Amino acid sequence: MRRILFVILSILSLSVMAETESVHPFTLNTNAFLDEGALPVLYTCDGKNESPQLEWTGAPDKTQAFALLITDQNAPNAEFYHWVIYNLPKTTLSLDQGVSTLPAGTTTAKNSWGNPKYEGPCPPKGAAHTYEITLYALDNPLNLPASANAETIKSALEKHMIGKTHLTTVYSRWLE
Image (cartoon, rainbow, N blue to C red; front, side, top):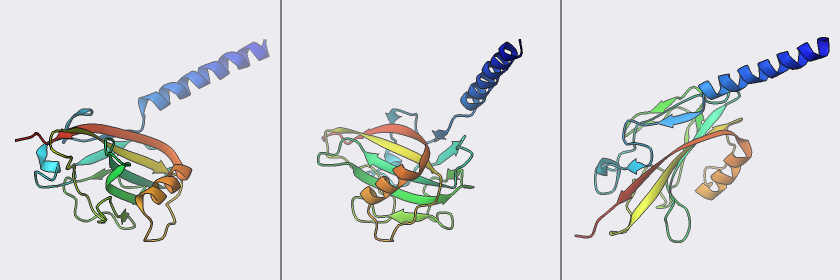
């Protein structure tokens, strides 16, 4: 009888844990656009080239830092990086639109243009490109040299990733 009671309590406990985890998933949100929707011109090379507002909730309990990558999924030769930031403090839960000063301790790596900053989508005219904004929860801040490129950072963060969430957006520059 005790064994049956233990099994029932274990099942109930797992069920409550699963419900708790699903109530607070790790999510990334923005008020700039709808997930899988069109990216407004403001955030692109055709507009003010401002970074979108971002906020997140539900990071895993053991999160010690965050990393954020914005990539063009349709670049012809390789993944194209528009923004690469890492070692965002675990207490950071949002970034303002057009943020110019990141929280202390945050590192900005060079994007695919070779600049350590946000540079918005600027696809060739006539083609729609898909952009992924991915936020990683890390178990430790990344210990990398200042010269680390985006590929090195991505490889390092995947070894420390304990959670991941993303948004997708599309932008195209039409032929005139």
